[in-house]
Image 1 (cartoon, rainbow, N blue to C red):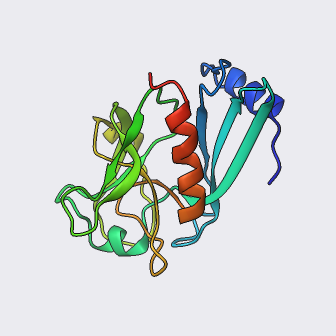
Image 2: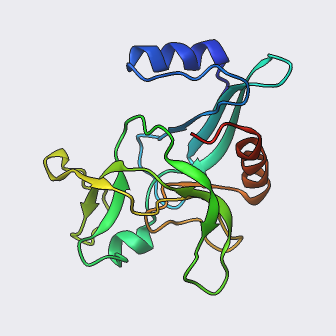
Image 3: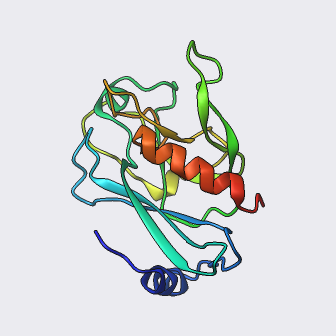
Length: 178
């Protein structure tokens, strides 16, 4: 997939999203593949920004923005597996830690602001998105790397390969934390 800065800016305008233009003020976005193939990197996380030379850039990273099959069948929460809804969520990530309560916590972009979701609790293999059951809150759907052994997610709907994650954290470290 090849997208230009101008194309991303037009998409933001079409959706009535605010597009940030200051140096390293990142526009982080996800592109979800509608075919809903499970446990694959069939989606993208992108970053549109201006660097310190005022060059307009877009970087796209293969990722998954959907919960994995394991977690659809075995939700981490009694109310069901969380699925992030489409929308703009400004200033919702900070440099932080993923897996804070587990054995192997690591650096990630940690959710710090409210986002909109639905919960899927029928434990089948389909993403059931019923907008009438929308919930809003901070549920720690972090933007983090995956392991070599599994790519599915229990709700952290934006997950990248390890090298790409380090690069994204580097941007975020230079950007405005709003």
